[in-house]
Amino acid sequence: MAQPALILSDPREAIYQSLIASASGERNHDAIAAIYASWRCGLGAMPDWLGLEPAAFWQMMEWHFPGHSLPPAVRGADAGAPLQRSDEIEDLRTLLLGQRAGNGDDELWISDLLITGCMAADHLWQDLGLWNRRQLSALMERNFPRLAAANTKDMKWKKFLYKQLCDTVGVYTCRAPSCERCADYHACFVPEEA
Image 1: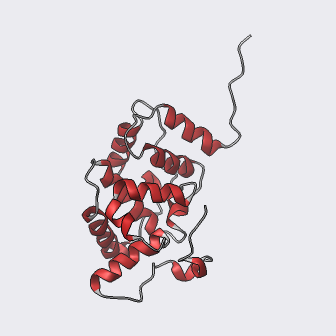
Image 2 (image 1 turned 90 degrees about the horizontal axis):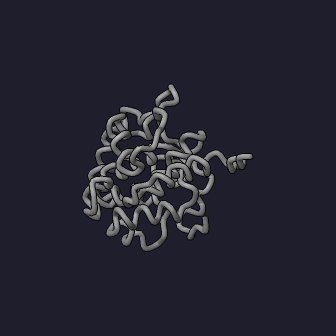
Image 3 (image 1 turned 135 degrees about the vertical axis):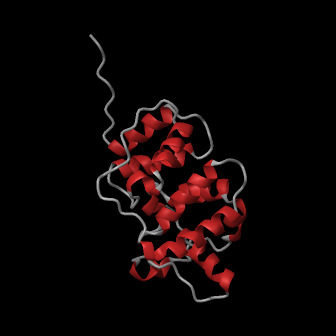
């Protein structure tokens, strides 16, 4: 008699493990698997195609998980970035791409994922669908090491990125657009365990 398949009780973990089993071993596959698994389970704040153009989404997934059969990354209602924030999106893109480690084209996809996450209202790691802040810190260190090293006060990542933008233009009382709605605003400079 055949053994029953192991059933994981957490669907997000099951999707993640399925992706990891087919991972190419390229940098960032763990974070992309977590972001996609969370999105598939309705967690995080990522829109259709994880905020990428469909062709870029498929390229990213094939690069990191070759041959893995995936359904289209569409839920039906696209929660893309509002058009009035297009300047902000370009500023974030300029910041991130100017600080790339230069280790691969997947840094372009990671930049776009981070920018998409910045358009939502919670902490960046939560909006991306990562499972904890340490995953985001590791992603930043791997892809944007100079930027990561500049975060000497362990500031929350979204706030830190917006502060970098404000420092660039000489505005020193800067906060991320979603800060005023954040329940954790008072703890923004406190080291985070999760």
